[in-house]
Length: 182
Image (cartoon, rainbow, N blue to C red; front, side):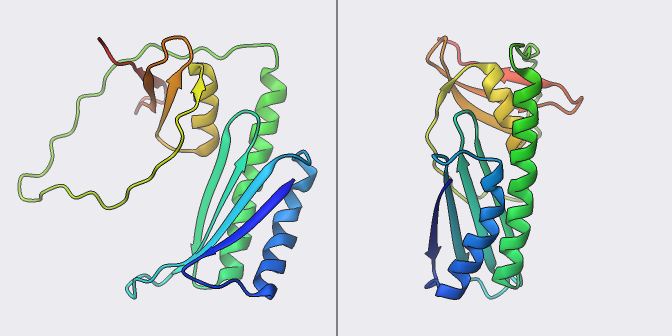
């Protein structure tokens, strides 16, 4: 496991860096020596946010990318919460890989959910922007990735069509796949 610890909006003290490296070392028994693990520690500058100490972790496995984010009023507590969450994700990923070895998960057919109507009084505002690499994968791999990160949707490049697709969790518990038309 190759660990990289960096700070954003703060300078990392040797004490915090050592603590983070020791805690993230708990994941070493689940990961190979070549698995890159990135830990980013930051402080939110907004005074209205009480839990302004943020710890974000990314583990780039051969399959899905495991990500987690935790906040707290204390950086050590945020690191502890983050490592616990990442450990659960890694265990779930390893368990699913062992159970599904040789079998393929089936993605249900897509059925579009009608968009909810926005409130007339409020104008929608973009509050956060994220960027990430859209990896080519099969819908089955995208389903595994979606379940591992725990989000409601996942965007990926379909290896069969080379188009960007979106896999999403439906209210009934099943999944939908959105494919662009030409």
